[in-house]
Length: 228
Image (cartoon, rainbow, N blue to C red; front, side):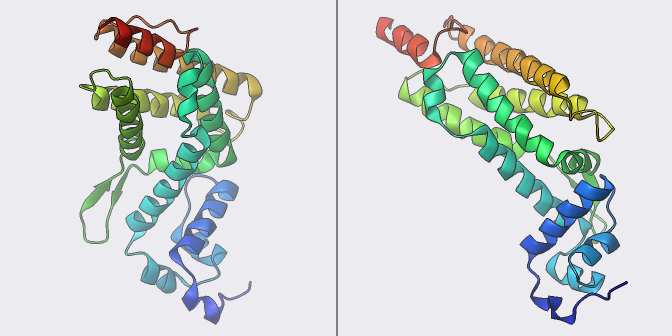
């Protein structure tokens, strides 16, 4: 077995995260730091010069996957010009596609939500917080441009992300083959679409807005605004 290269002192945090993702993709959601160091072609002490502890590395992996999923879901406000079900299905299909690129990594993150740090403290991962904060900012921008009352949008965002993260775990299951089936993925997208639309519809109805899921949201909200 080849020894780790002595040139690896320049190995960056990003390169170590790349290596960790390759290990998890290949070997499953229970990687060892030894395996990650070996994949990165460095010694474990060198790995810990880049990351304070295991929790530090896990956090970086989580941030990488969160950005990937968010990018795949899209940040296209023209979705407001599509009927809600169509728009949500498009967003959630992109999200599902990103998950299927690294299903073991998302299983790993779900299992590693509570991890002890080297100093004895416990780091609790909140995989949905960053996503819900991003969703809140986008939703508030849209609501203010209509305009409608933005009160409660942070709660709506957390609820939407919580539902999606929770049923992602159900969709992925425990085996590598469980999610990688077109019918199972289509079921996930369909179910997620209906649950998310139900939450958004409920939020709008509390403001006295009845939105048709087959009519673009922007059209519905603009019509309501004209009558106020």
